[in-house]
Image (cartoon, rainbow, N blue to C red; front, side, top):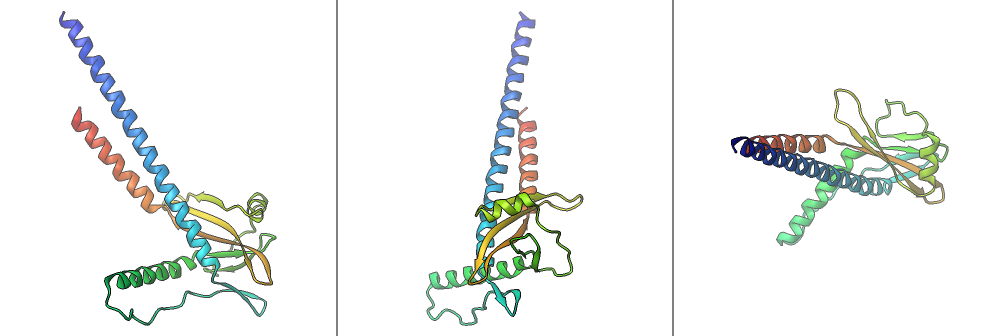
Amino acid sequence: MQAFRTRIRRTALGFIVLLLCLFSVLLYLGLSTILHRHIDEELVTLARQESQHVEFENGHIQLAPPGHRHNAPHEEDDSDEQEFEILEHEEEELKHAIRFSVVFDTNGQMLWSGEPDLAHPPLDQGILSQVLEGEAHFETIVNPGRPPIRRIFVPFEIEEQGPFIFQTEKSLRFVQETLWWLFLLLAGASTGLL
């Protein structure tokens, strides 16, 4: 009788451990998917905003920084102040993101870079054809010792100049840190429950 109870306890404990592991894995994968989708949506929005600032003057591509809003809101309404602060924050984010932007021509050759000292190889033909068909292309760059980077390539047009390709990127450090803390939380909770 004692052996039967021990076997049932072990089976129940094994079942609970299996459920905890399954729950943890599903939660981790779900949050990872949500965070990556969020980053991708932010990148699409950022690339579209940045590409609106690209100008073609004197045969050269230029990326005009977003204009400063020097005038404070006229009304003291809280909603106006919040809207003004949001616009200021978006402008600062755009200025920071411009450093990581690159403009390519339809042959995949770099025309402009926010970091002119860095050499950018021509675009891969697969990426080039996908983007020229009007689709955004995403890729993740993993460098040892650094957080991964999510990169996007989107098509855009400059009036009377034709199509170009805009590239920008964002660090996945936030995603990495969030998933690491979730892992620690799930491991600690699972250990505490057992």
